[in-house]
Image (cartoon, rainbow, N blue to C red; front, top):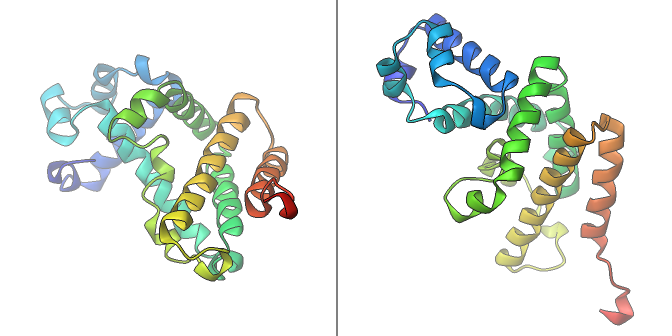
Length: 207
C-alpha cells in the first residue's frame, strides 16, 4: 500500500500516477508491467516511485483497493445484503464487479489481474498475499451477515462456509474472464454453485 509520502502528494499528481499505472497494468500482463514506463509517463523519478510504493505488486494492491472501495460501498446499498443473506452478498458483489469492470479499459485490467493471480495461486497461498486482493479483507461486508441463517453455530464452520462462498465467486470471475461470459451467463453459473453450497450435495437420509 502507498506510503504517507504518496498520500500527501497533491491529488492531481496522485491521479496522474494512478492513471499511468492503470494504463500499464491494463495493456500488459503483470510479469511484463514496466515500472520504468509508469514513471516515464507519470513524469516522476525512479527514486520517487520507490518512496511511494515498495514494488509493482504493492502498486497493484493499491489500485485494487480503489476498486474494492467502490464495490463495497455499492454492495452495502442492496436490500438483500442489508438483511444479512450470504448468497445475496456474493451475488451483489459479483454484480458490482461486473458494473465496475464494464468499461473496456477496466476489463483489460481485470483480465490481467485475474490471470496473474490464478496462474500464481500456489505461491500466493504460501505467502501472505491474497489470491484475489480486491475480494479480500471485506470484514465490513461480513459484519452485515445474519448468523442465524447457518444451520450450525460454530464460528469456525461459519467462517469456512464464507470462505468457500468467496472462493466460488473468485472461480466464477476467473471463468467469466477467460471464457468471456456475459454477466447473465456468469450469474447463472454462480447461482448454481451457491445453490449447491447452500443446500449441500447429499440426500438428507444419507447425510
